[in-house]
Amino acid sequence: MRRHALALITVVAAGCAKTGQTRTSVPLFVAGTNVTEPVVAAFGVPVTIERADLAFGPLYLCAGATAGDLCDTARLEWLETVVVDTTLDEPARAGELLGVTGTVRSWMYDLGISSQLTRTQPFILGAASQLGAASLVLEGRAVADGIEVPFTASVPIQQTDDTELGVPVVRKSTSESFFRDVDSDESALLLRFDPSAWVRGIDFRPYVSRETCTSGGPTIACDGGLERTCDGETELSTRDCTAMGYVCIPGAGCRERLTIDQQSEAYRSLRNALVSGGRPSFNWDYVP
Image (tube, rainbow, N blue to C red; front, side, top):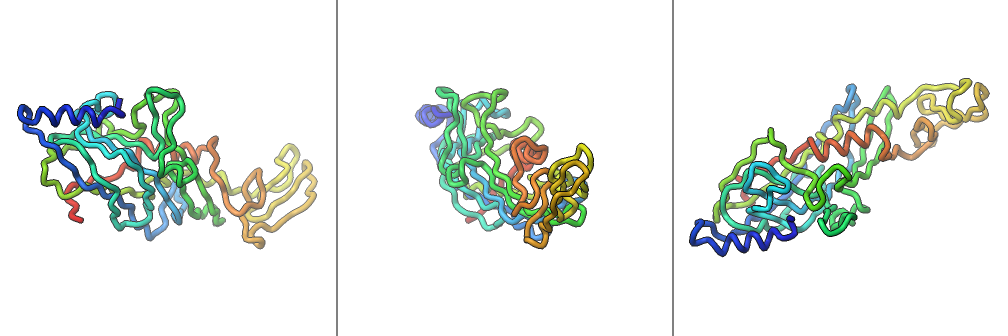
């Protein structure tokens, strides 16, 4: 569907004499948000974001109020990708939105991983390739129950069995307001991302425990920053993870940092926030 959008725009532009539309280009800028204070995640856990690199693009602005298959009448599109350091608030130029003048009422975009109607496997585009085939690489530190937990997450956002092939995953919802009558004198469009919106729903409490060796308990128990190796109620050995500069992760023991895995609730929270929440702001009044 959308891989033919440029052809559709060209056809529309050819009818300018009848429609009043003209070919146009709009400079596209992207930026993050300088989050200087810790973000309060689920259950009041403070989180310091140290890295939040997002693979963004392509982007489509649609004439219809609902994005998706109905975006065959795309007004403007940017078919490239860029890595956005969403911890920085300084805008960076990503490229040019190309298309025709006229009203846009919805949007949709990929996060560096794009699906095609002609193949089942998605394409890993340039920005996601830079991030190791991920849409978001997030790093930071959470403090749960008085214990600091350094963490990292690598999240690919791509089409799944319950989404449409050939259509970007991230789209304007019906409840969101979006309208612009694009003319040939647009200064620029700035999209600003706020990484704090992606971490607010994460529950870090399961990654901190105060366990001792018990019958039927885990073979590796974390008692705060102390790792206990157990055989039932018998303690075989201990290691002070904190003294080693590590964190004790339940079930794993001393680790340099927590790696949020794809089967966890924390990972699902991040993915849902990227797809359905934490939307970027669209600023048509930005002057470079």
